[in-house]
Image 1 (cartoon, rainbow, N blue to C red):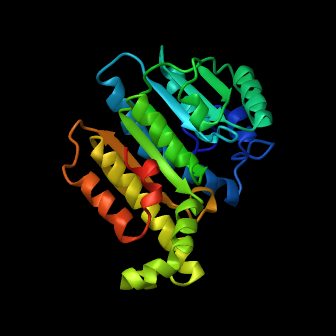
Image 2: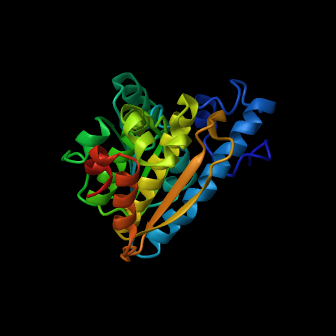
Length: 273
């Protein structure tokens, strides 16, 4: 029985300490109580997706891209995968020291169905260390183009669900800046990104719009909402894609029109495939 009512039954106290959700003496202060609430908020988005996968098969696989310290993967394993007889989580991260620490923590906690790979998102798509099909793909705060690589990975792995919290979408904003003069003579809409701060924010917004259209063109239905409070980040847009094998008929055309209207044709290979 847990002595702290906010903690769910069966949760690993050692894990919560490692994630700095509990203090070293196993207590909750005001800051850690807020962190725990954020963890549960995120889990509540993902748990129904995991259950839906299991409604149609006996096991499930999840790949977490840009895993960092594998915060998300460990929480999901502790709250959901731990009680399953089968199921596997793959944490994919480019920083070798974080991969090593995650492997050590998983071994110490007895989380045997977690694998941590020192790979880029792009490299993981062709890696033999991952299965041919992945049920759920997550990428939370995967910077800039890593989110797009995660989408490509998910499409190739025929993921049923994709959960994205995009971050630092700088590439498209740079292209907007490069063609700013041409855009001024082409469309009054260029006023939207005339000032640098607007270029950054508009670039971020359009990047996610194009990602949504790409996913819809491949048969996914989208839920776009806010992931409030997660890691105190202003990058709180949450995109949940569910594969329904029903491509939106005009998604590709809309995407192409946006690329042309905003002088972003050179981005076509990233968003139109």
